[in-house]
Image (cartoon, rainbow, N blue to C red; front, side, top):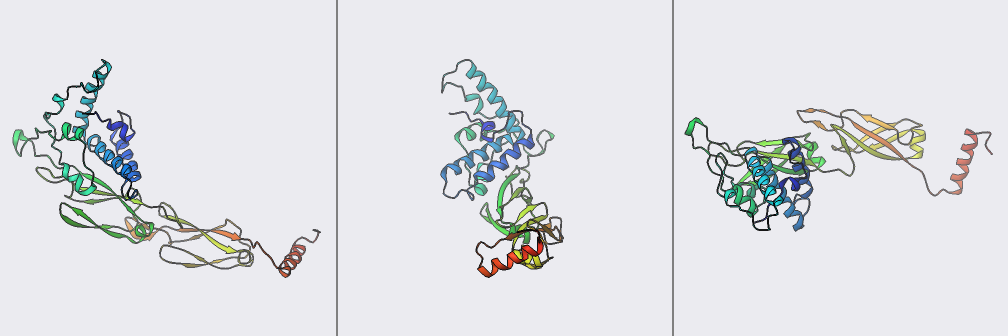
Length: 310
């Protein structure tokens, strides 16, 4: 059996704390998620490895056992141990104080199976006390995280998703104002435990939008106008997630000038009736082809503005 370096898989140091491990997991899970890499078998395998690594390193009991195994395995390597010669028997027989892994739970929501290494080392971890034994409560099931990609429009309006979980259809509401990193909790839908199930957390990942750049609850957008409207003033159509609005720009507006449209940004997550602002940056287009009459008019205007110019 081949040893798996879960720290290397997540790209973290062995001394990494819980936050660093979770941050690395989220980043990699989004990068290699099957929804983002349809038909890519290598990305799918990488995604499974990432989830398996987090299943171990994100659980204090399993991480402690894994670290013990790692120390033993590294010591064996330093003594010149031959490939295939490591004694796995003490690590595949279960360990007191551990927690049995419900492999099917993650498979049903993530579609990510576990390796032989994982099931051999952790699948048999027994020793959890039954209810009331030794004065300890039965263990609660583990919480599970699952990345969920939505569009900026869905983040603006709110949306719903249907997930398959243990043969049931779960209807999930994503609230308006959700942003990347927003966690939606489904109580009792995580890994099963002897006393109660853990929770399922959907971690939102908002896809980049072709039109809008989001900064907190504010949105930034580039709007195009011709040089005549910029010079003389006029109306410009500005896109917003709720539809186009009309912006009146004053004469003499400059390329790159930014106009603030109050309350036209994203809803605030905890107060959807309150909204951020939208900032419209003016992009002025210059004609590339002019008629003889247009050139003459522009020359006359130039002389009026610069009487000393030749």
